[in-house]
Image (tube, rainbow, N blue to C red; front, side, top):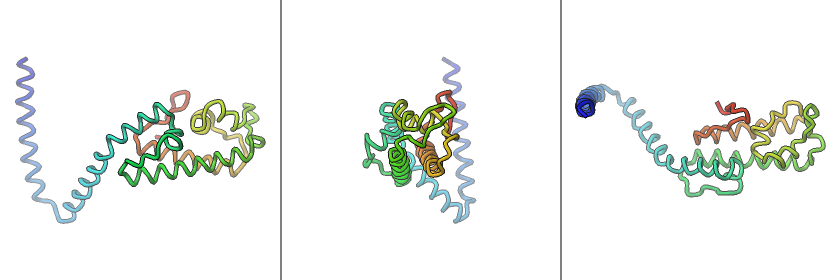
Amino acid sequence: MWNLIIGGILGFGASRLLDSDNKKKSAKYSAKDKEDIKYYQEYIKELEKFRPYQEKVKDDINNEGFDYSFRGYSTYDELDSKRFHTLRKKYVATANAIEKYVNSKRGEKLIDEKYDISVKDAIDKEGFDNALLTYHDWKDIKDPNFKKLLTQYKRSAKALAKHLNYKIVWKLNKQINK
């Protein structure tokens, strides 16, 4: 009990010392520094305002899946974050593009012969996002259009996941959005 009381007193004293030190330092800031500080304080406020929604979106992803959360479950219009909506729209556009391309090929030429599986079969088996992001790397498919679309899709998914502080994980627990 005494340890807690003494710890509280020491913590309070340390915070008062640090606070007085910060006040002395703030008097030394130039106009440019103060502008930068104001910018970052506003940026932090925007992030804090977004944070409760960030957790909601991560819960939606955990419950509904990554792809369905953004292309079927919600447009998240209630979120007030331009960055999030820009990343979400890019993800939706790249996901729609690769899905359209895969469906137009009907899996005929999009087969990984080494593992004897088509992209379409993998999507049917694992789901859209899992098949393209975590199930397989699809490096042995030679179709240049597919490779380009897959690269764009992975980049947009990684950027959106990173913004949400969400980890996309390989089946073998390897993170792909480092």
